[in-house]
Length: 164
Image: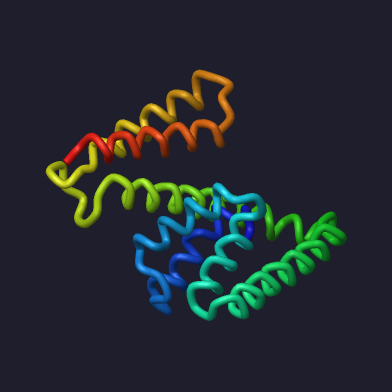
């Protein structure tokens, strides 16, 4: 996909959750979290996770190899990216890429804040508070996003241990 791993998330979700039903939506949300926290591109980490879930180690190897092949094709793009026609096509794709990245973010927030239908009574206020705190920390301090994710995870663990 154009726009990187986050732009690809709606495409990945459509394939592995909706079309093939290899993962549930909850597992997909876990996949995004794990893929973001582990080193490497989110698409490769996601492919490895899904490959392992579907077919074990051989599945992980095939899925990872396929992502590497796509990366090699991307290198070809880098070689020919200055061609005017290609630049025109890519320029017209930018608004779609922004929309896809926004869609992935909204999907993740929706799954974190609500387990089913979006209703005020079904809102997970602990997740809303953690999101707001993490957002403010990232915007107002120079803390590393990884540190903020670890702090949010630790806070969620503490909250889950003290609430019935």
